[in-house]
Length: 64
Image (cartoon, rainbow, N blue to C red; front, side, top):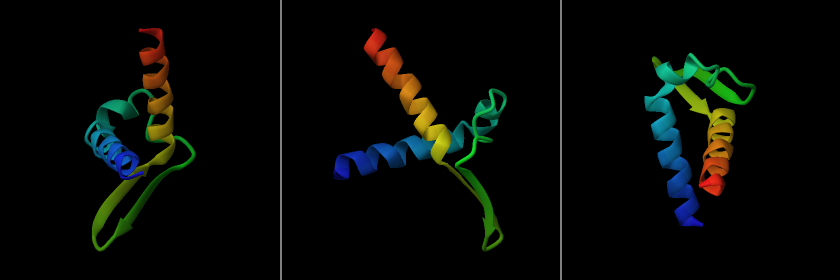
């Protein structure tokens, strides 16, 4: 279980870093992607985008 938590955390960090590039393709604006301000910082939690990219990566891995 800890392995999945690490994978999800790393995926969230990767997507958060690539957010400006991915927004051109519509990711980051899906229902389930959360944007909010807390303590003077803007937070972005891309849950739906993470699931969409995970499905895409799974399809590509299965194809290869």
